[in-house]
Image (cartoon, rainbow, N blue to C red):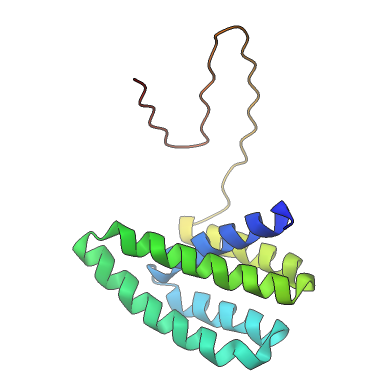
Length: 138
């Protein structure tokens, strides 16, 4: 499978689950349902129902500090978006734009881009992160 398709589906899955926990969840739901109406209209009602049920599960899990549920929902939505792209490869650009828009809304604006380059030689090690990083070595 094309790594670009997997990356876009993964980014969209993470973005939609993050958006479910915000005040803009209804806009996010309408946008995701709109994608399905455009590319797979026969499945749009099911996606709408999934979103609503998953949002309730996410809100409950966040209240209880249940991180595994959030992670599972990201996996489920990654699968939804991957399935959409497998069935309708021409949805790639629309899904990429959708994911970018959700990211911007959830953080209040565009994120700066980060470009990193590193070179290690011999026994050298390189650790890079665009954000949080935890390194545990034995």
